[in-house]
Image (cartoon, rainbow, N blue to C red; front, side, top):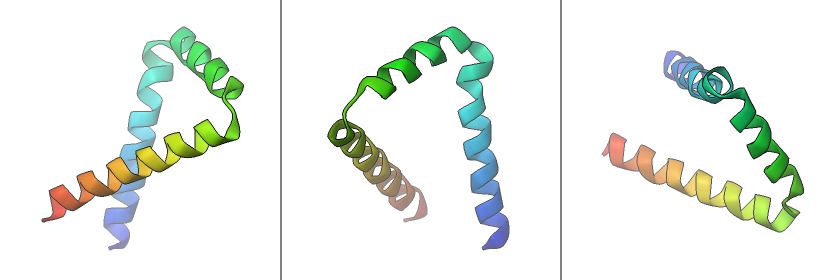
Length: 62
């Protein structure tokens, strides 16, 4: 399980690094928009993202 967790974290880091590497200006614009959102919107976005990840994980594992 430890190796799978480290693999998952490594993949997250690779995926997170793609946008700043390919288009730093787009990343800046996106971050500026995120900073302007209220807490409720950010929480809902986080919840939807987590649920999408859980559903995808379930589909891949079963």
